Image (tube, rainbow, N blue to C red; front, side, top):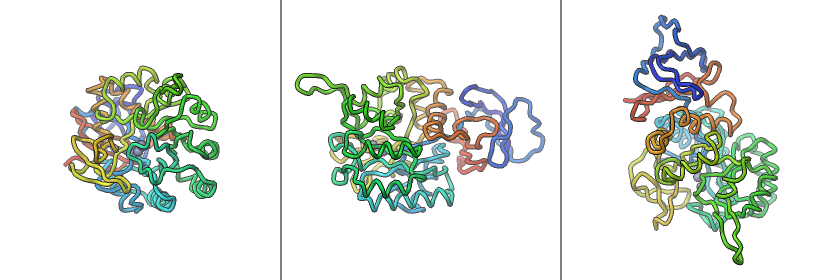
Length: 386
Ligand SMILES: [Zn+2]
Ligand SMILES: [Zn+2]
């Protein structure tokens, strides 16, 4: 395949009018004056942006389906719904639920990863919950929030090769043990739905936590205990260089000024974009379920029924890239880092997240208005407009 005439964002360079050649699922060449006379599979990207495909390490659903549906069909639908938004790799996320349901979801993801999907690649699973703080539950179902038991730890350890990330609250009983066990197996441990003080975050760092899930959503702030102030998870995220963070850049969860504040303090390489999308991504407004919970989709975001909090986003990655470029004012190079390069490095993927010779041919081509023109996964077109 030859992609011609576009503006290529690698994201280390911006190359106008260069050519991307792919072969055997890999990027074979990126060059200025390549011989493209062979005439096979030419894609005209004139006036468009060519970026590394988006990598979403935290996505619950899309196209009407949810990871907790725990079927291949649901995961395939989610992979397609997000490929339409330019995403080439996803890590489907669970919610707090009985262990049996979580294990079913893990089994389905394991199968989808092996079999392959028609849209974005399924890389593995992200366990969000059930080891969370009820005080910061957000849209997580409190009935299923609990501490870590030895039986559950033993069961989850069996699936360590399928689990890519765990979002948990470090102050919950047993979570530090879980973090030591899972981080030693290369699984990303991320602080989430946590009411921890900064002193508890120190212990979390020692146990292997290295990331904070959706900063500002379900994280503690500075609080007063007996008149004394205790910094929380948000302050710890700013203070500790060891912690990277992710943001939901749908323009609803975080206003542009907060995104600017986060980037200014953490640096562009430590801020990763996730959709945290639920099943209504790519679907019309209305009433939907998040796990067992009812949620309302309205004004481009999911809400709890009493509208006290957001319950996940319904945006795809291209919408987030648009918010970052147009509302936050970032360069396309920075947008590409936050939507692809950083996700690849969080998961330790050396073959993705950059447009460079020898890397996987996972590519998104965007129109000037950030609508998706084409999504390419492993050198195959999985989505094309119209
Ligand atoms: Zn969450
Ligand atoms: Zn989530």
